[in-house]
Length: 121
Image (tube, rainbow, N blue to C red; front, side):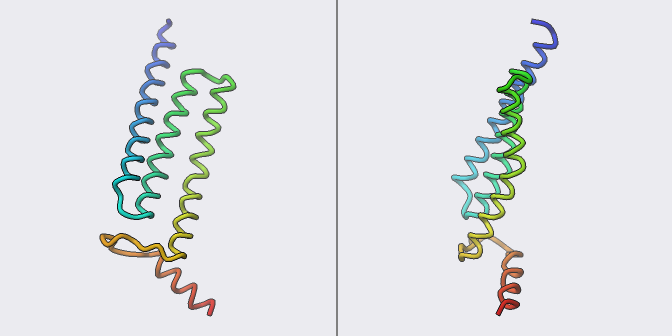
């Protein structure tokens, strides 16, 4: 093995461990956090970062082969679509009356939604 291959292998393993750590934190947040909004936040932000880390690790491991290109394409797709999907899910949950946890201090979207509803009437 050359020095470059060894460095790429170590970097790939580092990205894999970092990605798996973030995926683990996302799943821990899914179990531990109190309401749908907090759970969406952690699974979207941390889970997307973790999945992208794993996909980047795969790209570094196999190079720009068809598998590597597919991996980075999936990673970029997740980075672009997961936050939008989480926003739409949380908006739908809020509109259907899913409440915030008792520890929540402020509901900025509730003010906007109430104002929009009054304007429609």
